[in-house]
Amino acid sequence: MKRRVASMLLVLAMLLVNTGCGGTETETDTNESDNSTNTTGGDGADDSSDETRIPYDFPELDCQQGDFNILNCDFVWDMYTYLDFEEMTGEVLDDAIYERNRSVEDMFNVNLVVEDLHIDELNTRIQQTVLAGDDIYDVAYSRGDKINSIIAGGYVTNLYDVPGLNLDQPWWNQSVISEATIGDGDAVYFALNDFSLCAFDLVWCIFFNEDMLTSLGGELPYDLVREGKWTIDAMHELIKLGTNLNGDASFTFDREGNSVYGLASYSRLVGSLMTGAGVRFTEKNSEGYPELIIENDLFYSTAEKLASIFGTAGDYIEANNRENGQNYEMLFEQNRALFLGGEIKSASVFRDMEDSFGIVPSPKYDESQESYYSWMNHDTPTMCIPATNADLETTGIVLDALSYLSYTDILPIYYSIRVSQKSLRNEDSIEMLGIIRDTLYYDASLTYGWTLDLYTKLIGKISTGDTNLASDIAAAKSSVEKKIATTFELMND
View 1: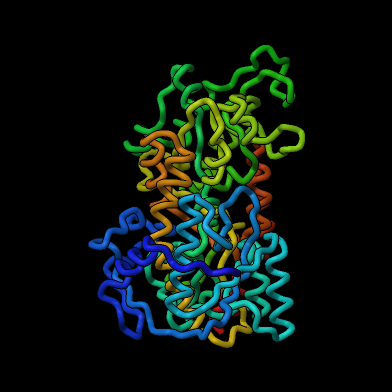
View 2: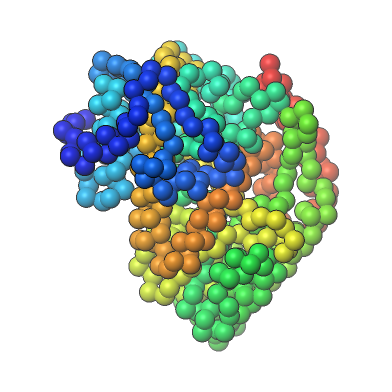
């Protein structure tokens, strides 16, 4: 990869970043580390001025032009997966990433090398290299819902054993670390940090067509969110405004038809709305042991509310087939769906949409719920360190520095350019984006595979309006508890 001489902008940026630095050990201000519900960056990510940024002492390290190899996820699902560029592209976000990487290369005399693979090939590559005893990758990304197998197989390193990783700092996603750490709390084998922007791209939210909703006499839901009144019931009332046959004989999908749907998405939306309502599959007890807790009134009541939406023809359409046009994003773009349940990355898909659209977090169960909750997709490419890595100290120093600079220098651009200005079209939605960012929830029970089969069955039934769920939970309970016990033993051995 060709390396260019750093520009004056980069030099000035580095001077600012290094003000007050020069120690050989990483030291950070822990006053801002309590960020357990925030994603990449949290509240502080939007203000990276010299006066407010968290101090960071970059350790002295000379890699003697050695390679720092990263296994990354290739472009998929419209996510922003890019970790490096061969040269400046002229796009602000791309160029900021390019300069971040060159600055780290100059600082540590290291050569960053990124290998991109399809998301479904990542786990296999990690396993192959470790089984062969090859120390190829310093850092690797794994498909989140498949990472449990490489943890169980001993293919990855405990991140608490890696010197130089400031895992308690906001450039490491605290929700993920908290949920992924079980038992005595001294082992965690995967994490999300600000080096990759995929995680926030795959956070679920609710889009709506502002023009359509206004013409139908509906209230734009921004104030409902602000007042804590954005609930499942409130959303359903607005959804009903958009349900219209428009002369069609039925709401059965017809690519050439005229019917308009209240809400378009696919079954994963059920899981997002469950999370938004405060439903949890597992919860850790006082000893850090995860217990299955889904058999409660909140779960069943939420399931009833959601089934009334998903089971009503026209109020909802299951649409995840782009080939025949029955796709939730396509229907929303074509003004055939008033609301859409999807991930943040969908905002970039709607750039050419003529109507104005807005974004809000997943609704609460009811107004008494204290907080909104925004679900992070468990498929998200998840960071790990292969067990064959023979130089954990170098890995920790380089990786943490990349993540810190992403937090201070990349995230403000990502929020304001890629998502807010280019994709979202009004200040209200930008405010909503901040609420989503500050209310993230990561369900490690899905990543570890404890509840994945049960989750898939339950959301599949609810998405068709079926609420006969008790027998499914009862049938799965023993299997879930055995999987939890296996993971707990592994993590605390």
